[in-house]
Length: 92
Image 1 (cartoon, rainbow, N blue to C red):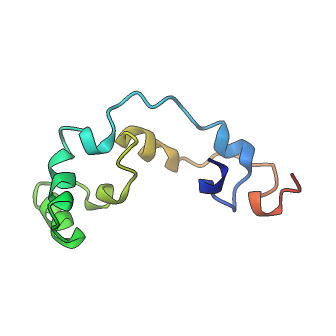
Image 2 (cartoon, rainbow, N blue to C red):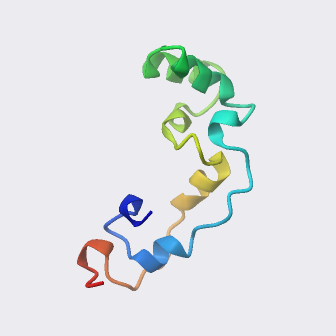
């Protein structure tokens, strides 16, 4: 939804980067599902992040949206040329 967009970037630049999410949701990804299960069982976030780091994974991934694939969320970090006004200044 538009409420989840970055208010410092234009709407157009954020919406044209929306790709179809073809990978499994992060919570169902075999590589990460056990860490979401740990959270569901009540382990603190720090303990889960330590386990991920111990297993050679990036602990910040556990903070991503569990309903979207890892690939769709990590490729959104690319800089896109943005000539439109930021969302917070957009008159629309």
